[in-house]
Amino acid sequence: MKGVVFVELLAMADKAVGEDAVDRVVARCPLSTGGAYTAVGTYPASELHQLVQGFSKATGAPEAALQRQFGHWMLTRFSEDYPAFFQAQPDAFTMLESVEGEVHTEVRKLYPDADLPRFETERLPGDALRMTYISPRRLADFCHGLIEASLDHYGETAHIERTDRSSGALGIVDFVIRRAAV
Amino acid sequence: MSPDDSEDKVSRARFLREREARLEAERLLELKSRELYAACQRLEAETRKLDAAVAARTAALSAALERAEAVTRAKARFLANMSHEIRTPLNGVLGMAQSLLTEELTPGQHEKLEIIVDSGQSLTAILNDVLDLSKIEEGKLEIAPVPGDLLGLLERTRKLFGAAAAEKGLELTVAHDPGIPARLVFDPVRVRQCVDNLVANAVKFTLSGSVDIHLAAGGSAATGYLVRISVADTGIGMDEEAQARLFQPFTQADSETTRRFGGTGLGLAISRQLARMMGGDITQTSREGEGSTFTLAFRAGDIAGLRPSDDAQARPQAPGRRRILRGARVLLVDDNAINRQVIKLFLKPQGLSIVEAGNGIEALEALERQTFDIVLLDVHMPVMDGCETVRRIRNGGAAYARVPVIALTADAMVGDRERYIGLGMDDYLSKPIDQRELLSRIARLLPEAPPLAAAN
Image: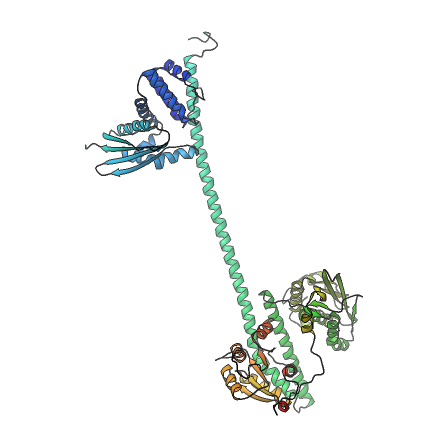
């Protein structure tokens, strides 16, 4: 898991629950890094789950909700850090479609060993897009948040229908995103 | 918070500065990584461009090489064709001239005819040289080692050039180291060609003094022998520059040499190639005005390594068994009327009876009609060529299936002989046909008893 995810999770938590609460959660989690992450590093995905669990306990909010909220936060950060990429895509569907081919290709240029999830996309009749998230990391809620935030970024409203088709260790989740008629 | 609160604590401002610095470092690292990636991409593109350039250059070079090789092959083919074209009319000229020599002539006419025959034979020799060289360049010449007598070979060379040397007042000697095996395995045709060339040159370029041939051999029966035949003269010699040019085809020491001594300058080039093909070389030492020594080195095998039959095959036929030519029936097959005329002029005076055929079909018809003692068969003919004709003679199951056949051809390439024998010919003669050669080859293939007596 790329370090930027950890850095941003802690930044969001700082903002949401305050630095002292974050320090307490971090102190309770048995993290290999002791909670010191850098955006350019790579860390075990299990530590992300530990942190999310820790924040869930500390705030009483469900893990799924936290992941989804984190998806929103993350997309905002991406749009601030890589504005050119968002400007190049005219709407949320083309942006989501470009994740696998363009975004992940760019990531692999900088981090050839990055262990990235796979996204499959397919346009469906009636202004809809099916986006399938395939990964052993089980971060479908985080994805859900990212998709919602993408739609928000382009000022679009849509209905998202989610189907879990996971088998064994591999998480497979379909998101059917149907844009509301304007 | 103030700095002196505790040594464990840092101020908020300091913490924010540090965090900002870390984030900046991360951004910088990512930027540098991206630049590094771009640089790598550029390098890879450059490498691909270079690879493509190398591939293009290599392709261009191999295309050029292919063209050069094609030109060489075309040159060799041209030489072979030219030689064929020249041989056929030369055969007519030499044949007629040789035939005229047997007629009643004034001494002046006789002398002129001899010059014609001499010149024709020189021309034949040059053609043979050109053909040998093109054959070597094409890689088609093969060395055929058989058991042979080296000293006998040198003795024959001495006899061949004895008259020419004596005419110039030169001494021509043959000597050898002790203990050289009486018989060794080598290619006598090619060794003879090299030695004759060296001796011919020595005699040609020596105005007074001597030409000394010396035979030496190192090695043993187990390892094989390295034979060294040196030819030392007291001739004009050469400076170093001339020596360097010596082995180039069509090159002589200088143009003055060509004017004074003649020759094509092919002999040494061919001889050196032959020597190298026989596992040796030709080397020379020379001082201008003091003479030259040329040494032919080649590998020879021991006779013990051979099956007895190999040696028996190579042994010359026992002399004294004279065959009688008179009355022998010859079928002469050649599409060229002049060639037939030449052969007839050669054979008629010897009392042979001749039936002519213009191609293979006519030849087979003649063979059906009557019995022949020998067939002289041209190889290149329209309608049915000599190769197909001999195949039909041998495989047709007819009464004449075993009639002796001598191939006649202008294709005097080395190795052709083996090819024609393989096709079922009994012997092979290259044009221009020499009268004595033809008669002796015919005699060798005729039955020992007079054919007419046998028929009766």
